[in-house]
Every structure is written in structure tokens, then in C-alpha cells.
Image (cartoon, rainbow, N blue to C red; front, side, top):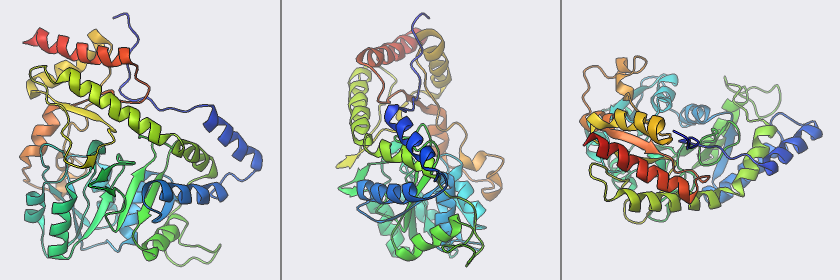
Length: 370
């Protein structure tokens, strides 16, 4: 292999971000301050139609504090997908509530409405769907179920900055929504998260919880955490906000090129996009036969110089940490997806030549195994 490896993901940090960090460092105000406040306002206007938005130190913190702020705690159950990163189930468990795992709809990889219905009990407090890979969950059906049973919706929008469901931006649907700002997300603050809140009460609760339970110094109102974002991180995020729309369009363009190139390759299922949905392609995830998936992943890297990733190889209800919440549970679509998915590079730094190499590499490896 002579060509340089095409990475599965590639954070973009440029001179603008470096200059913003230097500006904050020169100011002497490094902890949570005016940059964080400005970032919260700008993020809210950019993505969630101005809803009250609170910055925190990670997406997982945002999810955890959002649930606490919305009143989730011991004795409650929250329905979550098993096919996602463990932070979704972890955040429920950390409140003292019980994560209840439901199966996924196989085309979108998001919560299956019928599996959600089957998981509801008298203890169910809410549903926390994930907008997985940048495709929104099935909003209409999940909202209908929530309304019918008097349940809250909490959005895990960690991977879905700028996605929308039939004109509705993700982050404006649930009682709260969490966005991750980890380096490999569609935009980053270096590390961090944002919590979009449907009410000022939830927003104030998140603000209290992120800052040792106080809004006024030394006037602690509740038991809280230190989950603040720094002004250094916020400065990076503010710059990234000015670029994320362009990056999203590049992701969508790259996905279209991959769709066209992979469509004729036997054994490959390209990503589904529901009608009137904006998919922001945090990941470009194909399906291949389970017997071929790991061979394809390894051969792409070793023989073709193409990175890829499996998100997620072990369903949450099978993890040692979360399995105690789901004894004997069978989720067939989740298990099938975990064995078949492979995420190919789709990030904005890809060139036309890179895209051609990705398509050619997938074709060559699968042909060789036929």
C-alpha cells in the first residue's frame, strides 16, 4: 500500500480557531465566562430556533444533567436504543433511573416505534431516541406514542447538528436535546456539549447542576456538579459555528458521490434517508453481510489505504456495564446491525480522488471475496 491512509474521521482545526484561543488566553478569562455565554446564544440561534441552550463540558454531561433537570430519577424508566454509544444508557443509569432497551428500525438505525410500545410500563417516564449517524429518529411515530402514554421525549442529538425531520430541526423536539462537541463530531469545541431546553425551568436546572448547584456564587441551591465549559473551548466552538454549514454540505455531497459509486456493488446497502429529512452524515454507514464485514474493514485499511469504523459492534444490552438492566433481552434488528454495519469516510476533508479510492476499494475487496 503506497497511498496515504484516508482516515475514517478528521477534525478540522484551523488558524481561526487558534487565533480565538489565543485571544481568550490573552484576556485572562479562561473559565466559564463571556465566551460561553456568547456561544450559547449563537448555537441556539443557529441550530434550535433560539431555544434556551446551556453549554457543558461534554455531551455525556449534557445528557446526564438534562435528565436530572427534567426530573428523571430513582424509580423511573427511560426507553433507549441499545444500538448506540453507551453514554445514552449510562446517562439514564447515572440518574438512578433504569434504562430500558428497545430495538431499532433497520433502515434508519433509530428506535423502532413498535418496540418502544412493547417496552412501556407504569414506571416509564420518557423515551430517549438517538438521531443516529446524523439521521433523525422517526419523529412522527415516537411523538404519537409519547402523547398517547403521557411520556416525555429526550433527544440524543450528539451526532445530528443541523439535521431536520420534515422541516423541524433536531434539538427542538424533546423536553431537552443534547448535542456533543467532541473532536470527531460535525463541529467541535475541542470537548463539550450543548443542552437545548424546551422550558426555562429545565434550562435553569441544567445551569444549576453544571455549576455546583448555584447561579450566584456561594448560594448553592441544589447538589450539583462541576460540568462547566471553559471560555477556551467556547471560543473554538464559536468559530466552528461559522463553518459548520459548509462542512455539512460537503458531507452531504460526499455521501451522494458514495451512494452513486456503491449502488452497483453487490452486497452493499447504502444509507437510507426518509422523505423530507435532512441527513447530516456524521457517519456514512453501509450494511454488508456479517460474514464479510470484518474482512472488508481490515482489507480496506491494509490493502486499500481506507480507514473505516464499526459503530457499534456490541449492543448496549450486551455490555457488562449495562447488561444487568436487560437480562434475557433479545433485540434481533440491533444484533443484526451490530454485525453488518461499516462506516466509511465522509468527512469534509475528502477529495474527489479519495472518494474514488473508497468506492474502488470496497468494490475490489468484495469482488476478491466473491
